[in-house]
Image (cartoon, rainbow, N blue to C red; front, side, top):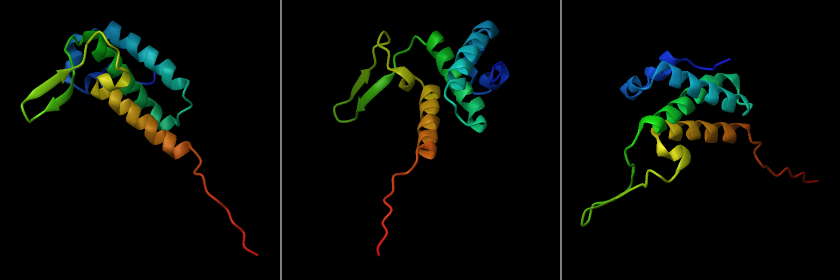
Length: 119
């Protein structure tokens, strides 16, 4: 069962108007499967699925290079090679997905503490 909808992804940005409903459905299914395997709290599952599906959809339509470095002194701009995979960092949607995962990891990972008993 998909964890988000086409409408919710389209509400993120006008960038998704060029992606067909069929393609978005496929990305939602892929993202739903991925998120379901994470054992993330239910409260976060729709958001994670939405951002991962958006990331996958944008990767499929984007032919642009991403600026990965910009220098102001003696102007310099470095672009990523679109043929190289930079993973979730390639889109703002993937970055948000990773940020949520990192936040969840911090919340769910037990904090290491030292318990001392002085007698």
